[in-house]
Length: 159
Image (tube, rainbow, N blue to C red; front, top):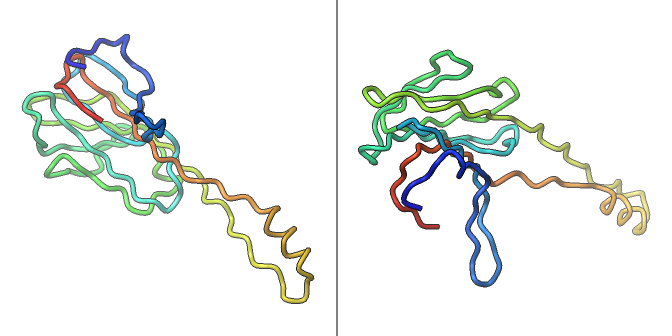
């Protein structure tokens, strides 16, 4: 896509000829010249989350200031900031500002509680009980998606 319009906002992903697909990203198209890239789906508690801030022109990474719920949280000298070991207190609306280029739209980050770990069955139980205990446990995979708020005009991109 060379030019995008607000009506192009939506969920995008790449798909190979064999049918496998990439993680999806949410594209929000606005008229601004600064974008913030962040996860679209809830991130797992304890994970590291990298935020990326870019200006439309020039396309290389510029220093950016990052904000959570309207409060300054730090500078990213190359336009990146990593939130280490996220917890529910990291949930909120994030945005960034590139001096001389403007501010990105806000992106929401949600944190999902880590599923409890199941303990192995006790050695006194029978084999069938062990199999039952294992089959009853569930593990929820973590999300692998990103959210991107994009300006109206974009350089061509490939998967």
